[in-house]
Image (cartoon, rainbow, N blue to C red; front, top):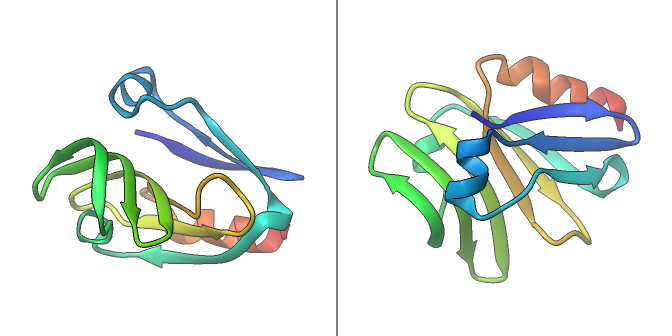
Length: 114
């Protein structure tokens, strides 16, 4: 499972080897100055909208890039686990949506580091 880490001056998404293969992505690193908004999403599997490039197991797991109207979201979530949604500005990705057992603490750490 991917993991969000705050390492000022950046927020990084560290993906597992399997996620890198399935998503065709590498780890993502964005400056804290690009973070526009952070929120906890309780039903993370239902949150991604648009069409996907990656793996989607309905109701179980979503890994990949979801594209909607003018929006690209990197997604790594699973059923029963909350996620952190990080909205970005001026970056390759518009959002990161990453599952975390301690989503509230991760979101608070990102907000505090901004």
